[in-house]
Length: 90
Image 1 (cartoon, rainbow, N blue to C red):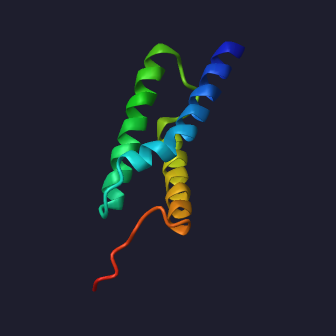
Image 2: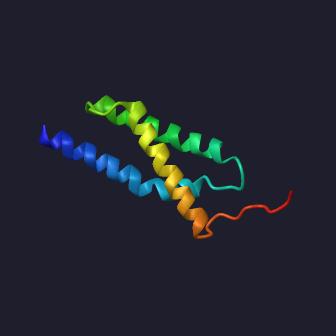
Image 3: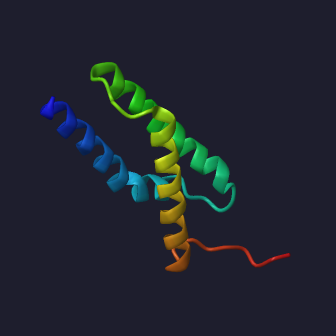
């Protein structure tokens, strides 16, 4: 039981740790929601693969909600520090 908990917590931290790199990998100007959806689909596929090997005690929808909120926070931070450039044309 403790081994499963360690694996699950490790997986969660791995996903959170890799989110900034995943977000940056999909970064092209515009279509923020579409890019977020791609990342969430990737994380969902990882969840399904791991859940096929060991039972994950978290609901997939709740985990994807958490990851989605994490993506929003990371993107907001990257916007503040100037990582992303935004068009100023109207």
